[in-house]
Length: 352
Ligand SMILES: Nc1ncnc2c1ncn2[C@@H]1O[C@H](COP(=O)(O)OP(=O)(O)OP(=O)(O)O)[C@@H](O)[C@H]1O
Ligand SMILES: [Mg+2]
View 1 (cartoon, rainbow, N blue to C red):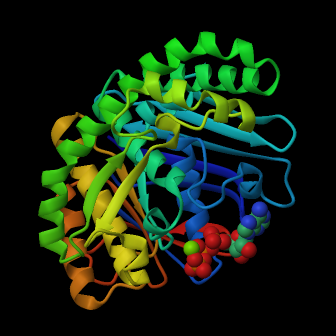
View 2: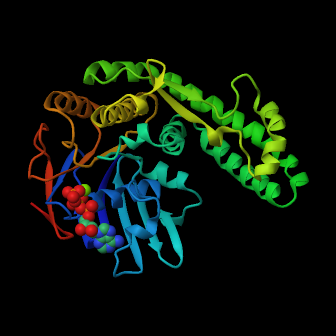
View 3: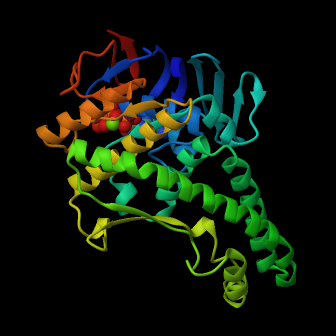
């Protein structure tokens, strides 16, 4: 699957743009502040319903406008038309093939997309939320039941938390659903992490990145069932008025010599590790599903030395997926010739 047409209105400095992306490798080049990352954010938005850079979508809307719209057409055996808008007043809405989408899962299925950007070290450095989201996107594609379990768990969690704030006695009826769906989520995540391991080991060797051990912290005591954990946490949950145990608190443990990788690795090593993890993830998807996501590479030359960069590029090319790459120059250091090139200057995008 790849993204063919991409139409953008009012995303950051981009007033209006229309690009025909190449199914293999498209380069978007331009100076600092020209709008390169903004174009990638627009593409990412189509498949994920959010930016990879800003937690709040209103930051994406052009300052002089009240709403943004992005439209895309995917190419492949089952092509899709995907459209998304974000209005400062009305929030977001999205359509796939003319139908309003019910959840982000619909966007994910229509246009699977992943990104490696200069901030990817945050996957190692920051809190668990980013890692959970990273993992869940892969689990969603690999384990067909996961989306439903996630959705039902999230709904039960909202209800239990609402009860804990008002009438704690009403919290208990939601727990059976939390246990059932939370356990399904956990089993699916573990299975995917297990499948990821050989890919991780292979990529570590190929790109010479720190050999971190990737483990799963399920979000409650390893020795307990989720049902027992909820029981043990009841008094604390009532006092804090929120659910303190469960897969919504899970995390990926990325460890080196028994210590969290973030405490040991340099910024460049964190970046390399996070990028390598993401390549392992994409390779797993390619082998175990029919999904081959589009990979957005924002300024891939930043911060890697020449040797690591060359190994990294070789692994990316082996993926054989659609690439959309940004660079400051009209060529991508270390990469082969792009199949299509756009130049962007002050938000104005033109084919070269
Ligand atoms: N909501 C917004 N409305 C209008 N302009 C914005 C908005 N948000 C950011 N910008 C501007 O958009 C411009 C393009 O930003 P972008 O990050 O896409 O540039 P870039 O080409 O990736 O630059 P760099 O090479 O420095 O990464 C910047 O000048 C930024 O200040
Ligand atoms: Mg940028």
